[in-house]
Image (cartoon, rainbow, N blue to C red):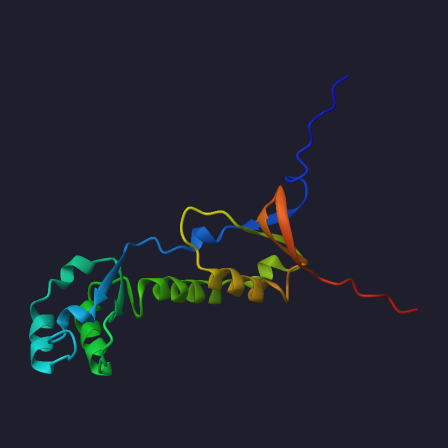
Length: 174
């Protein structure tokens, strides 16, 4: 007599959260101010304004934009603001910082809107493997958000997890 196969993972009540699902869907483009520096060192206002006026901003239509300067130069705040003036009508979202910082900022915003109550007293597995580069900061932020409400938090795959947190059971008083 053969034993019936039982999917213990499916019956465990585990809820899997895949942070890759929160990854920005729109393409992320870079705008490096170093390309607009005089001799690679100085941002000259007149030249910069002229360059911004003729730049093809339509290429950012519906996309995300990371605005930064990869050169070791002092960039005045107004230069970032001027880029925002021109890019805002086209971009889905823009941020001052490298593309890596953009992704972190995106996750902080998305996770900040997460309704943690839906995970109250639940056993959570935060999926570990992904095709996209989910920043470590996103895993930390999700854990910080879930810790006060979740019964337990694990990392990995439901069949092979690393336990991270388990809520202590309250002792009943006599």
